[in-house]
Length: 231
Image (cartoon, rainbow, N blue to C red):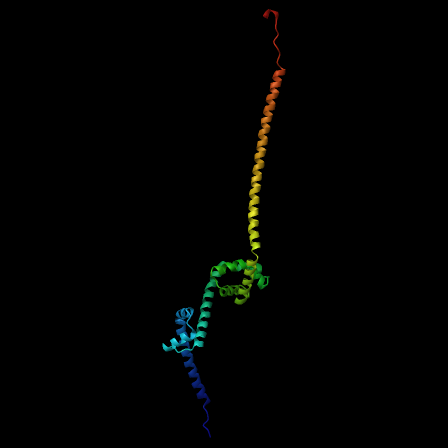
């Protein structure tokens, strides 16, 4: 009769093995985390995960290429989330909560369209889609990073494809400004002409009065009486 298996003992032994494996895995991941910047630079220079994993294994960090890739991707997400969290505080200053009150009844796409100028400005300042999406969600605008990226891409394309609307706005502003200048010039011209007319009127009145006085002087002239004794 075969010996009965001690299931409890086996379970305890497996748990110990798991703890040891977890500890070893944690140590590896921590090592990769500490070396992440250099490993990322090596990847940027074209070194494959396989080459890097083999080099690490020779240096005492036994790791396979797939595991190294998985660890680096996890660490990248961790860093991205941390940076996103730090950016949220800055976004609150750029896009205050009060901004969302006026668009509360719109659809998600309409909200993004309404906020597009501000969102585009934030992207140009270096804020990532992840940080912006996280902040929008904190303000009640439920949207994923992928959807936000897609909506902004559509809006940007629409703007690039139809620059006439933007140009029309600028031309309208210029036309309005030009029209205002023209009106001011016209008003000045009218005032100048009016002043000239008034001056001419005064001159005409003066000339008329002078002529009238001259005529009156002539009509009132009485020739002297010549007497014989004066001859």
